[in-house]
Length: 347
Image (cartoon, rainbow, N blue to C red):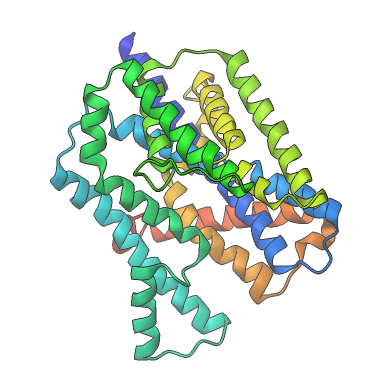
């Protein structure tokens, strides 16, 4: 019985990664369209598109929560050597290889000439991240989390439930609430020696892996409330010019945290038969989620910027069409690249 429960939990993590991967493609599809084709956007259409984009912000937190649930587990053997050779090396290799793939794309479609200077600039970009394609930030985020994983695992192994709750609350206060207040012009001299919200999601994933109790009603309420708060925040941001409210629907935002917890819990509550088509599709997407993440912005950039297609002329249908095309093409390319030895190691 215990083995079935464990298998079901691991399947849920795969479903979460798959669903989050799809959400990230949708997020970047919307962002790509509204950042390139801005001229025809009205206030109401901007609110709709930014709301849709922001309602997908839970995806990266859920990815990190799954990472925390798996890699902070004290039962999992995790040496520093393994962290470097298996996890950090894979992400670093992906960062280097795909940075040069993006350079090659810019040479072909953006008229960027090849030279040793171009190669050097790409290497500088890899180190500094300045000028890198927008979605690459997540690779730097992962490396940063992996570097401190030995320390995080010590905390997870020895912290009591109350201590873990205390840690999570401190993160929310200093990396979410005070960030929002600072954006509103209310400064605080108090701070903790942590610069990002992402370790919070890592520990949150571990906390739920250890102490989570099923409550569909709770998770549904959190998801719906987070959704409503994000829509209201986006509306107030653009209708009333309250720019500081953008902090409410980024990765630090309380509504984003609510949605991440709610969706994480709802997916954990799902039971899908292993032989069902839905399970098979989700597992397949999960197997290619990293490849899809690295590839999908190439297709979005190709269609929206290089070819010059404006899906917004078709409204939400155009967004949906580009999203489906991007997802299918990214999956197909990831599937093909995995046949090659070099890419098989990183995708």
